[in-house]
Amino acid sequence: MEIPKIFESEYRFCEILWENEPVSSSELVRLCRERLEWKKSTTYTVIRRLSERGILKSEDAVVTSLVSREDVQSAESAEVVERTFSGSLPSFIAAFTRKKNLSKQEVDEIQRIIDAYKE
Image (cartoon, rainbow, N blue to C red; front, top):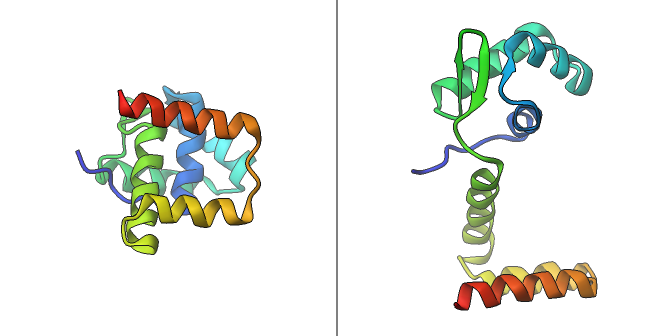
């Protein structure tokens, strides 16, 4: 399944949803007002749009996601690597590590991911 593009404000909304789902639409309105300073109408518009795009569902005033945070992050990361680095993951990692010093723990975690991929 191809993950639909989620824009920045929609992603912030989805973070609230992922943290609280299943959640009533009225509770989402309250959370979005507190955390995003959105009006009620904005929240309901985003719920409708994301529902139309297959990102979430709203049934009986209860909202749940249809895509996971991990799936969205993977799709977005792949798009960045493809668009910016011509699909080269090593080029992406080289560029990323030029500006950020990785801790030993981060290096070990990356190495575990690579080792698991090899198996």
